[in-house]
Amino acid sequence: MKGSTHLTIGIVVGAAAAVYYPFTLKNASLYIAVSALSALSADLDGPSILSSKIGKVSKWLHEIFLWIGVCLAAGVIYQYSTHGLVNQELSIVSVVILLLGFVAKEGVTRNIMVSLVGCGLLYWGWTLGWNWLLGLGVFVAWVPWLNHRGMSHTIWATLFWGAIGWGLEQQLHVEGIMAVSICGYASHLIADTLTPRGVKWLYPLSKRSFKIRL
Image (cartoon, rainbow, N blue to C red):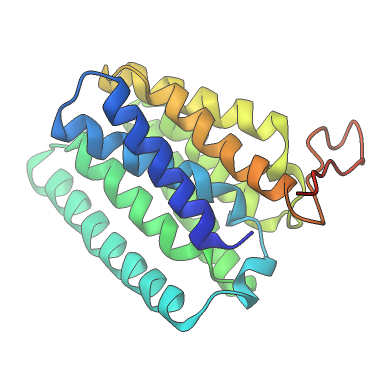
């Protein structure tokens, strides 16, 4: 399944959450950002077959995401180092955009860069005492080295991602973040289940690939 399809589904899930829960512009932005990342995060495993199938426009968009994410992250770090303040919403958006920029890339260099981002999130989460950020750091540092459609494409990874979403929901006191995280992540696995290769939902307990042919 193409990355653009996963991203579209994620945005739709986030938009649906924005309509379902009490609407504010900030909450709607959070729902869409979290859901978009959730829908694409499983493809942080690499090297990925997604990389060879994206078009020029997608590559251009991912480059833009990457550099915008870097700039936003630098702004958050500067604000924290000079004023000791952390804008939680801006921090989350910067992480989301930065990781989106890595989804369609592949190779050892890319994996190292993603893992370094994960280590940075681990340190940041430990420094601030944000358990959900520690969990995200573990996920981001670990997943790039997995085989594509391996452990990151399982029910266990979905539950782990949901736990990260629950921690973020408790941090921000925004209802529905955990549900959006789970639905966004699960949407990726469901979409891949509709492809000929399918998904090993129960790996490593079972190596059976579940698939639904339309």
